[in-house]
Every structure is written in C-alpha cells, then in structure tokens.
Image: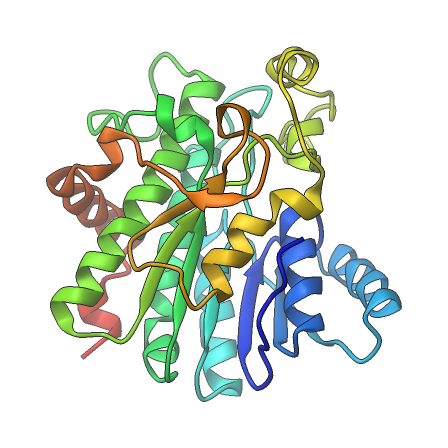
Length: 309
C-alpha cells in the first residue's frame, strides 16, 4: 500500500470526491494531514462521503463545495468562491469523470457530455485556478486519464461527436484529451518558468461506480454498460484502494516527474503497483496538444492570458 507523504499545511481540491478514486484520494490525503476541498456535483452525496471518511479518519479537514464540470458557469462560480476564501492552492486533482452514457447527451453549454465533463470542464477549472496554484510554493495539477486513451483520437473536425456518435470512442477521445492537456500544461509551465508540476495518471481497471453505471443525467437507467460487463469477466481488475495509488503517487510523491504519466505495472497495465507509464503516440504530439488547448480556450472562453498576467 502506497504511503502518502506528510501533507500537513497543504490545501487540495479533489473533483468527484464523493465516490471511487476521488473519495479514496480524499481520505488518504486527509489522513496525511492535508486540508481537502471535496468538489462534488451533488452536495448531499458529498456530505455522506465526508461522514464516511470522518468515521475512518477522525479530525480530517474536509470541506464540501459544489462543482458541476458539465456546466461552465458552475466551474466559474467554484473558482471564484475558492479564490475568495483561500490565498493559494497546493494541489488540484482532476479526477471526476463520466463514462459511456446510453445515448448522446449534451452539457449545459451544449458540448457532448464526455468531452465536456471529462475534458472541457477540467480544462476550464485548471486554467481558472492557475492564479491560486501559482501562489503556492510547490503546486501540482494531477489529471486522471485512462488506459482507453490508447485507443482515442482527437477528431478536430467533430470534437463534440455530432456525427456518428460512439459513446466508447467519445470516452476514449476525452481521456486522450486529458492526457494531452496535462502534457501541454507541463510544457507551458516549463516555458513560462512556473514552479508547477503537471502530472497525469490512470487507474487501470478499477472497480468503481464509473465501471458499474453509465452516465444518464437522470434520463435513463443505471444499467452497467455492455462493454464493462464483458470486460469485467475477461480482464483482471482491482479495488479502489489499489486503483487510486497512481493518482496519489502523482499527487504527492517527491519523485513524481513533471509531464509524466503513472499507472499500474501489472497485466496489460490494468492492475498492480504504480510505475511510470508510456504514453500513446498521439498524446505525445506537441502540435496537436497545442491545437487542442487552443480549441479548448475558444470553446470555454477561458484563456491562460485572461487568468495569469
């Protein structure tokens, strides 16, 4: 079991902190002394998760704040509220995500749900929080990708999947986009001399509610997607405690590398202890990453120049 180094005095934001890897990361960061803002879409679920964590970690410093990554106005409100309350932010963990909705849904801003929630929302959040992050002595931004990024491709001609929609391929695109976002943020930090570490991770095949329920926005059933039912019977999987470890390593370990990607070291990269993971070739395309970043700025209206002097 990975032991999180002492986090006393640090402030972390964890998105999707009410369940799965987000909840586990929150618990273990808090146990190591961090003060954690649990960024959740449904406050009641956040409060329930907070109570469960406090039962295991008495004295954990936890705060619930509402954040809906499928709504850019919510992202803006969250960032403004945090900036009004805190002088700096040490750690941002972009963990929340949705997977394989039963049909094509749109976010509040009209984006395809997975592209909007998994990539554009975290992108806007990261850029809006840059001033707080850069005010910290040694800030980190850690973004959760997925092994399915290996199968993704960025369709610049149809980023929102308005034609020939495939939930699986849209998910793969969104997680490839997350990895490319982390890489470009690392490049920006290096170019601008920011003392900011940008790192990505993936959980392998971890048994979470992301695996057992397709996103429906309340419009359909929570049936387990067929692809998960099939793969769950064929491939090795691990529990949340193990699946969260690459994320925690990227977020806290002194040896974590800027611009790196961490995941499980076992069978097919699905299970096992954390290791430095090879990135898919498409994620390493610097010109495509810059193009995607520019597209995200245009789509969200949130730019680095508007946030950082």
